[in-house]
Length: 180
Figure 1 (spheres, rainbow, N blue to C red):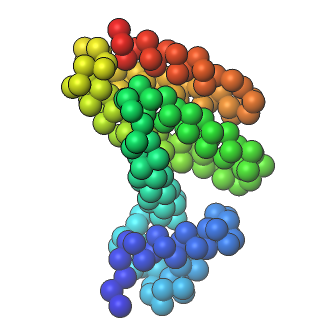
Figure 2 (figure 1 turned 180 degrees about the vertical axis):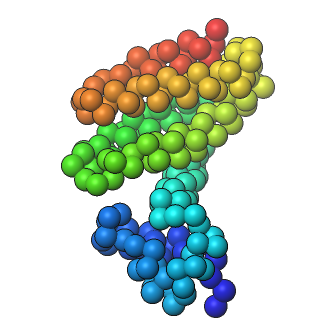
């Protein structure tokens, strides 16, 4: 069997779920796949690099699920608002489950991967909303970055206070931004 990045990431993800990050080693993955550690390092620079790859894959899968969930929304305003609500719900749930876990130390990797995936959806919705005349934003890419920044700022408030109710203010600010 030719071992690919995908095989390594799959094995790493299984170990991660069973043992956690600290107790998962590159050696464990090599043993699981019956390969040398050197083979793993051909595909990945480090254990952290494998972790990042796994998180990026999860973010891409989540992006697809969200897109499917929001596909039947009537307007792009509803899609963007729905995305914001989902992001806040998932972030809040993550903090409830992981506040005291070892994954808090790696939150920035996850935060960036999921933000990138969500930004792709925002970009799709903003471009389509501008094209059909629903949004009046003049510079699509700047608007996308500002919307992502607002969502990021709001979700970061949840790190401090999991019950923070920033979501309505973020939705309102984003709607204003999209229609100005």
